[in-house]
Image (cartoon, rainbow, N blue to C red; front, side, top):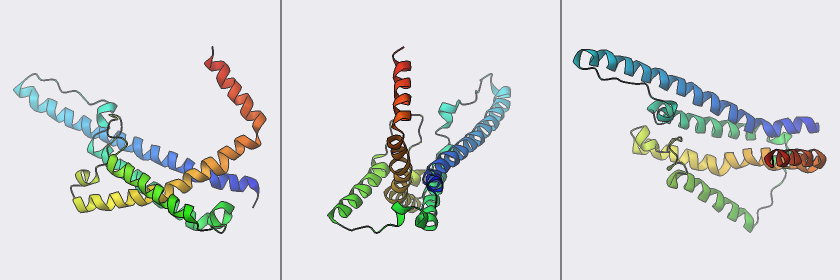
Length: 200
């Protein structure tokens, strides 16, 4: 295959992830806004007879924790992991770095351990727990089931350990870093442009 086709195959998973994640996110946000609007209108009609209380619609900042928005996160994760897994199975023969023989060494075990630990950190320490604009990873609470929560934890653990590293390696190491090195003149001009704008 030509180099151009290989480059497209390397960047496709990452780009599709960004596009699909944003589509699901904003579609869910629109649904959450509509649900909140209906609730506010119903509350205004009810309170109009009882009192003059004013009920206002929630801002996007507040809607990030709405049930609809919270469940959208799980859809995004599942879509990302399943799509990347299928991508690897179907197209691995077209990318040398995915189908070349892999020599198993002591480093292999180290990589597996690090990957599993990073997955455990994202699930149990929850990297978003102090960010108000991000949704927390609490599947057991969001779905009202401890067993279902454990299933989602397993899905995220496996996805963070297997699918995501391949997606990011293809995009960053196999494409963008290589592109920067092979086009040093362009990279230097781009860097100088950023520096010159930053120093103004």
